[in-house]
Length: 182
Image 1 (spheres, rainbow, N blue to C red):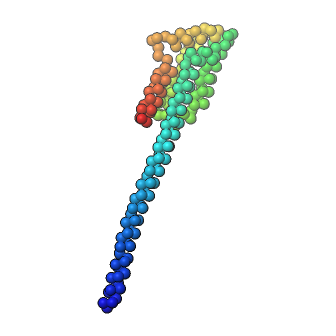
Image 2: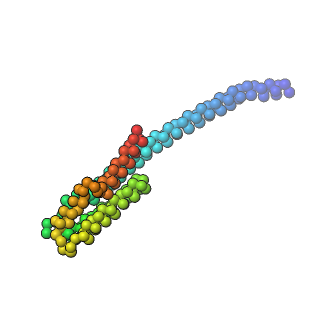
Image 3: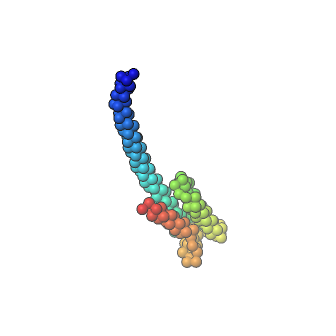
C-alpha cells in the first residue's frame, strides 16, 4: 500500500501545480478578454454617440433653416408677385409653410419634445398671423398692400415674431448639446 500511496503522491505532486497554473491562467485570460470586450464596447458606444450627436445637430440646423424660411420677411421675398392679389400671396405663403413643415417632419425624432412643439407652434402662429392679416383685407386687394402690412407687423418692435422665439429656443438647445459633449 505504501507504493500505491507513493504513486498517488507523485501524481498529485505533478498535477496539483499544473491545475493551479491552469486555473490562474484561465482567470487571467478571462479578465483580459472581459477588459478588451469592455474597451471595444466603449469605443463603439463613443462612435455611436458621436454619430447621434452629429444627426441631432443636423436636425437642429434643418429646423432652424425651416424656421428662418417661414419668417415673414423670408416669405415676402419668395412669394411677392407683382400684379397678384393679397389672397394669392397669402395662399402661396401658407402652402409653402405647410410643405416645408411636412418636409421636415422626420427631424422630430432627433430633437426634444419641447423643441418640436416650439417648431410646430411657430408654424401655426405664422399661419395664423398671415391669415389674420389676409382676413383684414378686402377681397382682390393688391399683394403690395398685404406684403406691406405683413412686413410692418413683423418689424413692429413691440411684437415678437414666433419664428424669432423658436430660433432662440433651437439655438439654446443646440448649444446645450454641444456643451454637454465637451
